[in-house]
Structure formats: C-alpha cells, structure tokens
Image 1 (cartoon, rainbow, N blue to C red):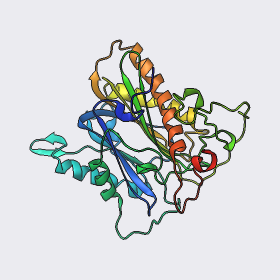
Image 2: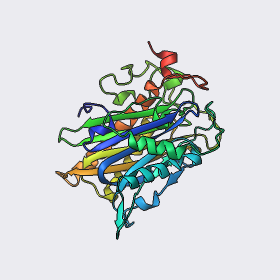
Image 3: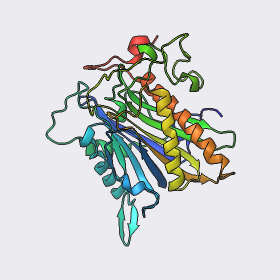
Image 4: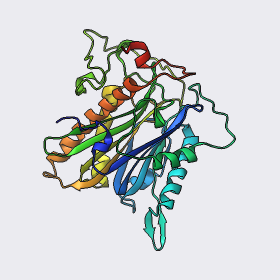
Length: 330
C-alpha cells in the first residue's frame, strides 16, 4: 500500500473536489462531485450531527446514487450550501430522472464555526452562493488546511482545517479520505507537536515526527468548547464496486480513523459522521477479503487526513486559536 500521486481523495479516478470560502466570515464550503452519479452511504456516531438528505442514503431507500456531497461550515445556516449545489447541478442538466424532470441529489453535513472570530452578521445567508461556487470550482487538484469548509475549523486546542489523503492498495484499488476536522478533542498529544495519527503516517505527510518518547495515555480530558460547537465530518471514497449496504459498513469501520487521530472522539458534544462513496469502477476480486481490507485502509487513511488538516492549517487575522504551523512549524 502507498499514497496516491496527489495524496488527495481525487486519486480515486472520476472524483473532483471544489472549495469556496469567505475570509471575512471565516467559513466556507467543500463539495465532492463527479461526472456521473455515484453510490453513497453514511454512518453517524457523534451526539450532535447536522445533516441534509442523509435518510435517503440508507440501503433500503429508493435512490441508489447521488450527484454530490457537501461539507460546510456555518452550523444550520451552512445546510443551505446544498441549495447552491442543487442549483448548479440543475443548470448543468444533472439529477435523478423522474419522467421529464431531473432532481439533483445532494446530501450534506455541517460543522459549527460560528464562534471562530469571523463576521457572522449578514443580511443574506452566504452559504447558497458558496455552495454554488464550490461545485463550479471542482477539480482533481484542491487545497487543504485553511480552505473550503476548513477555513473556520477549530480543535480542542489548535486550529483545525480541511484534510485529505489517499492510499493505493497492492490489488490496485484506491481509497481516499476528505475531512473537516473541527473536533472537541485533540489531534496533538499533550498539547505538543506530535500527532496521535503518527503510526499511520506515510512519507512524512504531516511532519514525520512520529510519537513522543513518552506520554500519559490515561489522562482525563476536559472540554475545550461548549455544547454544540464541535463536529468532524468526513467522506471516504473508493473505486471498488460497493453497493449502499457495503458502503454503510465501510463508513462505519472508517470511524476508527477518527478514534485513532482525535482524543477523545465521538463525544456527546460532537456530530461526528462519515459518508462513504463508490464510483464502482473496479469489481471486487474477493467479496469477503476485499471489503475487510478496504475498511482497514479507510480508517488508516482518514486518520492521516485528519492530521494533515491540522498540519496544513495556516494563520489568519482574527483567529481565536493558534495554528500548528505558527506554534511548531519551521
């Protein structure tokens, strides 16, 4: 197994990601899309999620594919970013066909970033426009860190951000992760420069620091944020052909990546969730062994993406938290 050529979720062929943001508001939107609809599922493990159209992703529901997934800042306001993506897809003639009508299917999830120092006083909700802009900007190359939905993300101590990573398996299948890291917990050990995700790092992608010589595993954390201010939302993607039931299992297992990279994770005060998507380009070689392997790789890749989000975050005027680069970077 090795990282893909971009080390981004778009190493899964056919996928594109777009970012749009407002530096004054300190918030933004990230959209995952493709030229053709793709299968998707979701699993929620946090106690405070904010979502749109996720019930449709259950294996027993009628629609079998989606046109885009949206990760957004803005708490409940940010759910409106999906409206902008729906409008962009409608203009492009995309959507689920019902007779002569086409209805774009765009599930989404949000993080809370309303107390991050940005200007949240607006006459008109900015998120529909940001969603439209993010879909329009979708490409195979995109920025991580303080971009898109990660612009205003915070962690328990350090600035959060948008992260991504990929892995190419020995059998040729590709797995990618995209994440907005805005947790109540901590990605860094003992408030230091080392990352909890270090055992799964590839090619020094978040500093190559490894683990510290010593740390206290049995510490008792206290919340660094108040009720409802935290969530980590992620997308796991693969070109392996999985149906909605298989993707539901993949999303469930991928949550292990959050637990490896964030301490604590899945708290009652987080809305942690994982979408899983498949382009269906590669048939499974082994219907038992391949899903087993994909789940393991998905969790490792998500852990790496979370650490990369914090590592790549950059400082900006009005920040309420220090970035990893400002505190530990060289």
